[in-house]
Amino acid sequence: MTFTRGFTAEVRKGLLNVVAGWREVLVNLITFPVFYLLIVLFMGRGQLRAELLLPALLGMMALTFIHEQVNRMFWGYLGDIQSGVLEQTYLTPLPSSALILGRQVAAAIAALPTALAVLATGAVVIHAQGGRVPFDARVIVPLAAIVVGTCGLALVLCGLTLVFKRIEIITQLSVAVYAIVGGTLVPLAAMPDAVAAVSRLAVPIAPGVEAMRDILIGGHTLTDLPSGWGLGWLLIQPLLILTAGSIAFNRLEHLAKRRGTLGRP
Figure 1 (cartoon, rainbow, N blue to C red):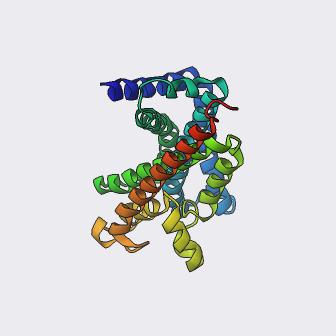
Figure 2: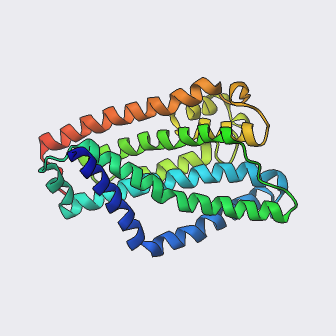
Figure 3: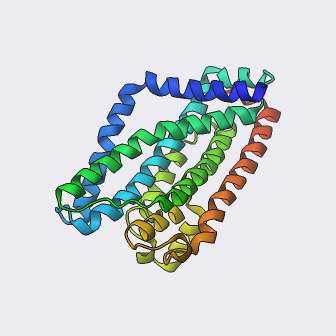
């Protein structure tokens, strides 16, 4: 019961923060779709080329989600540390697992509107050019993989925040890396083999983006994905990242407790 109440409270608190910051949400609902269109214009040399709209849309949706989810987790933790709220939470019987899980769920939900705004913008532009955005229920599998892997990354960054506090540059740099070499805007198949291999290993959204393109653009099934390392890796990679993130967060959390730095800004 303690876990359930704590989890529910964290989700509720996270969503209330989103509502309270509706202006920021509104700005994101505008800027990310515009950024998507600018990216396509840049790649198309000033034209919204039909062959670029859908591949870039799938990558931009994943990039938007990981940016929003990771940043909401990071800034939420940093804000609670600086205000002393986090230290008070650890003095209660509330399990820290309920705290982190509730925040993860709230951050994932809060990231959806911006990602959906990018999707809606892409669908409108593609439809205006006489095309359509295909749908296949099997795309739910790579979407779930992206969410799980992103949660693992957020755990690592939040654990680092507990110990080092000032790591804003890492969160911003990580998103820039995903945009450049994560397969979101440029397919990994067009990159050097070594870069593509590292991205498929370490970038949470890379296998999911490749799988979505194979399914929705290439018409392939989950069992014959030609890009990347197949269905097995699509399922295993996010679980490995989530496990690694859980272990890293647990150890960094214990380190912060031992040093007494949970409430130190």
